[in-house]
Amino acid sequence: MHKEAVVLVHGLWMRGAVMAWLARRLEAAGYASCAPGYHSLGEALDAAARRIAAVAKTLPHDAVHLVGHSLGGLVLLRADQLGLLPQPGRRVLIASPAGASAAARALAARSWSRALVGQCLADWLALPPSATPAGRDYGLIAGNRPFGMGSLIARLESPHDGAVALSETKLHGARDHIVLPSSHSGLLLSAAVANETVHFLRHGRFLPGSRRA
Image (cartoon, rainbow, N blue to C red; front, side):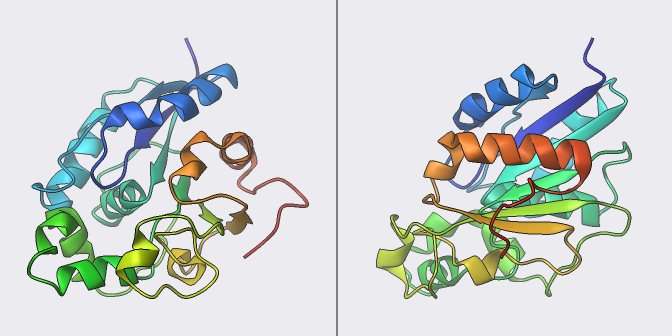
């Protein structure tokens, strides 16, 4: 049995299956993996955090790491804030707007598009600024290829990945923060993301020579 496991958390409008490519790369590196779902539109943020944590707590491994894409990173961060994840393990947030989200706020401000934001993200936007929970190693990955629907919805600060600005991915107290040449969705299928994630889970830092934010 693998000694360490990774729980992968999908983003807004998605399902766990979108994490399959990254899951395969992590399994090839020696980790067990699972990608539980949650209701990104209709479920409250705290309920989603508890749902993900409940799965993580069933895993019998020595360490349970969590990796989240976009909104998924905010869900796992909220689970840590609530103290729901007792096992040791590191965290990687991929294109997660931990600091802010101009695109989400623009959607929420319009009556015709408010429903597209969903309850999870609306709950996050209502919270005060966040920092990394004590005792957890967080690594942040951002993209800088501006291809995505977010840039059509709101004026995003450059550089951005088409949905989230680089400045929005910052989280006080994070161990490391890098920028990769990819769009928001493209990060899910990036070999560089997989390699960087594996390195961070093992060492608490991304690869030497990577572009730091």
